[in-house]
Structure formats: structure tokens, C-alpha cells
Length: 339
Length: 123
Image (cartoon, rainbow over all chains, first blue to last red; front, side):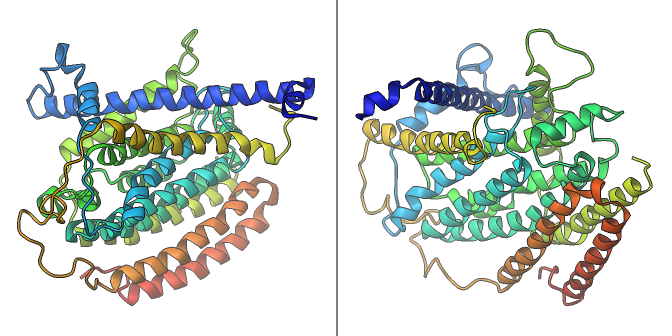
């Protein structure tokens, strides 16, 4: 039997159609998220600009609306400088791994009821696994660049990411106990069945720990020590330029979007809102996403950077005990049938 | 997608991973066709605020980073042990709750020990 016969048998034809739908879904999700990443940069510059009584980008297009596209074209045509002393294969792969780790988590996020790329039972565990992978991109970039700033930035960043990873993982245990599942769709459905419609209210402590840890995981202010401009220039990606730099930049924004989407799915009631929006089933996810992303920018414009020893002791001495306390508290309240 | 078997649920994850890899590699590949390449020795030097680099960049660093890494391995595994317990919490009832309190207390003993040994203090 030759290859064509295998493809065109009715049973395998079904498989091909399913595969095509699958690929289409993936491409749509990646495309939409990339579009939002592009304009998240514009949104950030505009909101921070207005918070600092500036206008932000204004020249490229009306109100600077074409700025992200201009930035992309510029980065695309920039020379790709690879330091002579760099460890080349690792240097090449680091940004790709960063973006790979960021994007993979999108597979399990439900955008509306029934729309999820892979409805797997271990959804939440998969997300945590993928977010840990992001540390590899950082370490590899920092080490392979063979520059002092990159090396220090990579070290700091990896220590910070793994410290807050624990708080991040523990803060979600409360949600798992409330939902009784790791499947992201099941978690949202459990929230819709819950009186408040979301886990934010019984899990307010978990939400707080999760958001702080998410800020640290994505290296955003006030936890942007790895790229503290005034001392480390740009941290682990000092030596990266052009398209490789753009990939790190995109990975950071995807990380921010993914963390917001996890917060929405686990704490904020997913695709449901106070009222139904007709014809746009994913509207609430995106409304909540933009509120959370705005929170990232707002905090960046408001809070100064942590000192490194404060950052470490905050993660280990405050967030982890808080997250553990939240687990015990949730267990106690659930045993007593209060929540 | 109900008729797909257990392992086949993961095929979309694989597809997404391939698309993500393809996105990263593709952007670099297409970029390499259009961008200029004019290297010279000074351009390829590691950046050190405009000065010629001094000394070896991969110098020894604080042992604190190793301690943090070890603590991470311990505590992250503890967190993962909590997951199956959390998922089946409703079905197991009071017994599971008491068991887990014992587990968390043992975990706290190690945590307090690390704290008293100043493993969390950065100096």
C-alpha cells in the first residue's frame, strides 16, 4: 500500500481533518497572542507615558499606532552581532528556548467554553513545568554570552525565578483543592458552580501570592533585578541584538500574558463575566487579560525596584509561609465545610 | 476530539510546541536572509561599557546561589507532593487533612532549620 492510499482511506481522512483543525487552532491562538504581544508593547509605552505626564509614541501613524510594526521591521533588519567569545550553539538556542517555554503554556488555556488547544488532565502541572523551562533560556543566555553583565544577570535571574517558582506552585494548591482537578476547563467550571463565580474570594491569599510570584517569574518591576539598567545594562541579554533580542522581548511579553491567563483561569472565573456578551465568547478573557496587563504596567510606573537581599528574603520568608498557610487554611475551611 | 486515545490528547501540545519552535527558528532564519553582516573585531568584543574587557567573565560566584538551588529542589518536590493530595482532597476527607498537616509540619521543621542556618539571608 503506498502512502497516498493510506492518506485517502476514510478512517485516515478523519485523522487528517482532525489534524488540520488542530493545526488551525494552534495557528489562530499563536497568531492572536502574537498580535496582542505586539500591541502590548504599545499599550505599555502609552500607559506609562501618560502616567509620567508624557504622551508616549506619537510620530509613527496616528497616536503612534504603527510604532510596534516599525519597531519590528527595524529589529528584523538589524545586524545580528554574536560576540567572538560566545559559546555559539548555546547562544543561538537560548532565545528560541525562552519563546518555546513561553508559548507552550498556551496549549492548556481555555479561551472560552470548549475552546482549548489540548484539554489534558494535568493542565496546571503542564503550565508549571513549562514556566520552569523558561529559566533555562535565561541561564543559557547569561552563561554563553561570555560577558560579565550577562553572567551576573543570568545568575540573579535564575536564582530569583526558582525562588518564586515555589511560591507560585504552592499558591495554586488552594485552587486545586477547591476545584478537585488540574484540568483548566474543569477549574473554570468549578468556579462557575461556586457561589461567588470565581475563586478570588475564598482564595484571595492564594491570588496575592500568585500575582507577586508571577511578577517575579516574568522579571517585571519591582522584581526586574536581572535587567536592572543602572547596574547590569540589560542583564542576561546584553549581548543580544536584532532578531535574537526581539525573541527575548517577545518571550517576556508572552510570559506576562500567560501568567495573566493562568490567573484568569484559576482565580478570576475564566471566560465568564457579570453579564453575557453576545457573539464574542472570548470577550471576558480578553477584558480580564487587559485589566491584569494594565496592572503590570501600573505597578511598573508606581513601585521602585527591590534590593536583591530584600527580594530573596521576601520570596523565602514571606511568600512561601503565606502560601503554605493558605494551603492549611483552605484545608481547614473545607474540612469544616465553610467554603 | 473525544474518540482520540489518552496519549493522543497530547498531540495538540506537540503541534503547538513545533509551531513555537518553528516561530523562533523561522524568525531567525528569515532574518538572516535580509540583515547585514559586517563584523569586525571591536564589534565582537563583549560589552563592558565601552572599555576593553578586564579579566575572565566567568569568575567564581557566591555559594549562596548553590544553596538556593538546593533549597529549590527540596521545596519544589514538596510542592509537587501536595498536588495529588489537593486534587483528591474532597474524596479523602478528614484523614487526608490530618495526614497532610503532619507532612507540612515535617516540611516546616526543615524550613525553620534552613531559616535558623541563615540560608535565606543574603549578605
